[in-house]
Image 1 (spheres, rainbow, N blue to C red):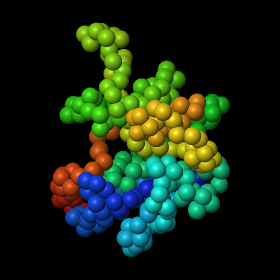
Image 2 (image 1 turned 60 degrees about the vertical axis):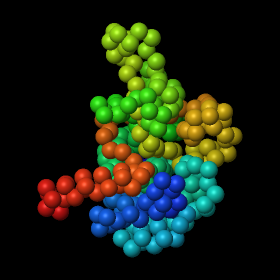
Image 3 (image 1 turned 90 degrees about the vertical axis):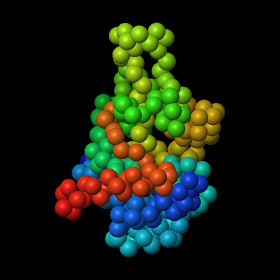
Length: 261
């Protein structure tokens, strides 16, 4: 079993919610909730916060976490991950997991699933350098919402395409067998990478669809690399706004009251 290192990118600046990694209405900063959830995964040997802001690094070290400072100039999270993996001098046979820093309700089982599907692909001889998660839509989620990324999968369980548009389109929409088998899946933005692919990724030229959709994972697909997908039922959401954070705090306090913790 290779080492599995979770690297959580965390930026201070946010257009809709500046400083959100440090929001602490629960008595602990939001980034600590993410860190602790990742550390609860049975597959993980190490959790590191990669940030461009000393305030976040100080907070992480304050609760006993591991933090490192990375460049503020990265165009996307994968690029920040690649720099962090270099700083950490991770071995080429390690697996690097990218968990989003704004998902305090992250289910540790998602990390296990992404790692398992990546290792499973390698065990069957497939050259898949990346894995991610897809989920059926919840009843209160709108598949047509461009803020929710959709993924279409191949028959072998790898990603065919990711889009902000509603895909797939069913021609008849009459509930036929074809329609039922082609229900949209939302993409959950957690990734597992073979460490050596991070070096390859940042050396690849940005691609037209990546830039049009603003989805960094499309760079891998457009350059012919395979992304394997684990399908799980995912109900947690990332925190983008103060209102969403307040809703999380209310849920957290309700759970704490129910469990006495």
